[in-house]
Structures are given as structure tokens and as C-alpha cells.
Length: 209
Image (tube, rainbow, N blue to C red; front, side, top):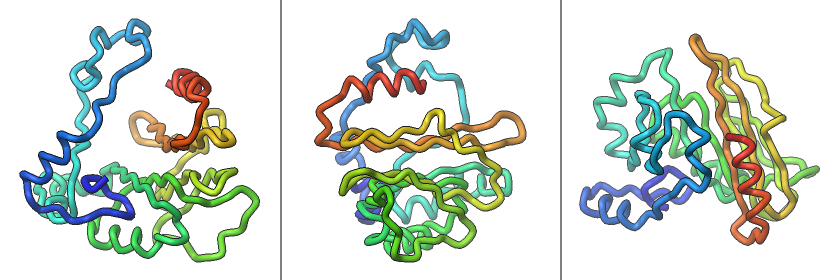
């Protein structure tokens, strides 16, 4: 997807192109009954979620670097996340590293999907990022796999009770980060596109939420 940061990112500077691309993105709908969630009375999650000062805007590199809101928000206490579909962290580590250099932003957590790191196989290349520690939930297949880079100064707990590894279906990895006020739980999930068992995946999502 050209409008999100991943190993295939292209720089899109035209507002018209950005709007046309966004209009083509699929609309996500809530499949779980909202009656179980006190603050949700309708199916529009964006309008009914609690008021939080979060920015989930899509950026290409140049608008990201020139956004004053982002510049002003960068402090030692700022928490920020980035997700990348690496399509093999070993093959595209240099591309990821270059993207992070271009963005020049101290992301607290970087979530990775489709790392293609396999269970019981040693990583042959150096995939260390300066200032970060790497966590991985590898895959049982030739695709998939998820992971996190988290900054060295973050105290966290690996949430093994939430993380999952399903052969041919999906992988997930969750961590709980200790913050001043409330802890944050961050997760990255990859569902294999050829997975035929959607019931297990939906059950897993409902149990996690």
C-alpha cells in the first residue's frame, strides 16, 4: 500500500493522488456486538471511541517531515508507533533502515509483519537497529511472522497470554509497556491470506479484545 510506511513505500507528494488512493482503501466494519462495550452505541468506531489525542494519519516521507504538529510533539515523553510489512526482514532490512533514517523520528515501538523469520531457524543477517531491542514471533511457514523493535529505554512485559502462533493461519505478538499513568498494550498480527479458517481468527480477536 503506497500510503503507509512499509518496505515498498513510494514517496507521494500530490494531495490529489493521496486522496484518490485513500478513497480506494477498504472500509473496515465492526463484526463484534457493540452492546458489550459500554461507550459504543453505534458501529462507527471512529466516532464512538473515547476521546484520545492520537494521530493515525497516513503520511508519505516529505509531509511527515514538514508536519509542525509532529515536530512539536517530539519530546522525551512522546510515545509513537510505526508499522511495516517488511516482506522478509532479512531481505529488506536495509530498506527499513533507510526509511527510518529518512523519517528521522524516534519511534517508541516499530511493529513488523511478514518478517519471514521461521521457527527453529537462525537469522543469518544482522538485523539489529541502534537504540532498539528486537522481539519476534516467528512463523511455521515460508511467509508470515511478526516482530517488534522497541526502544531500549522502554520497560515492557511480553504478553505471552495474548500472543499466538497458528500454523498456516496467523501469528501475533503482544507487549505491555510501562508508562507513567497507564500501561500500554501493543500488538502486531499477521493473518495469512491463504488461510481458510477464519473462525479461529475471529474467536482469537474477540478473546483478545
